[in-house]
Length: 284
Image (cartoon, rainbow, N blue to C red; front, side):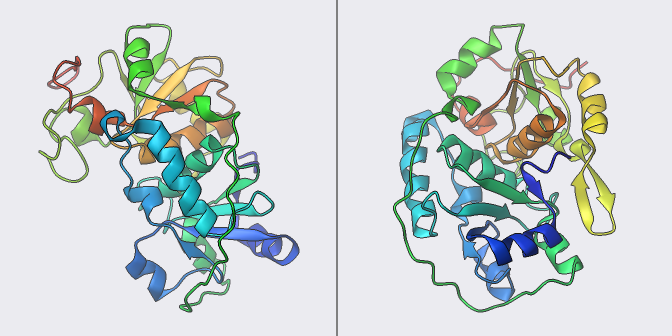
């Protein structure tokens, strides 16, 4: 990987000794209180928040996370480092944190490659002590907001054959057996966006002694080639609520795919509007 976004556990330990870092722990509070990286702040809503147009869409998302990240102590001067338990166990939630921060225009963001499991495997310090961050004004900047696609833009993209709509959900969701990771009937409809291609998000990673890590850029591009995606292909990724899509977003960008965006409302939003077209049944 390029190292521009992903940071290895030992490198993070060194960065924490030399620069101002705010660690964003996206795991559930129970995991956080059992043990976390010293100084980390638990921001669980990075994973749990559902963005849909009827609830204010991306404007509401911007407002919510500007407040949440400001409370965590991010002012623009610090490097934000987001982590989850491991790259495959948190549905891509650390990468979702990266996408949110980038959407808000935050200047310095990294994702702990391998998550908390990699930090532990490296023998680095862990604490159960509570964190007491000093809230700071969070700077919302423009410039990266085009990486997220809203419902209207997604409707246009579905009708445009030049844009690859990449579904990265688990196989039971892709084939229409389940509507979500929260249960088969969590959403009113099962299926997929018309014309979508499919690469299950797990395929962007491979096992290592420290847990699942992203594949090399060449390996990721080989996975992309199976559905016709090249480095110059416009791609919009979706999953259920944008977490697994964010994991794939990081993988594709690190591998050199130049035009990658995320439909953040994803299947949770699209499936709830019966007027929107879907494909049902097992794909051929």
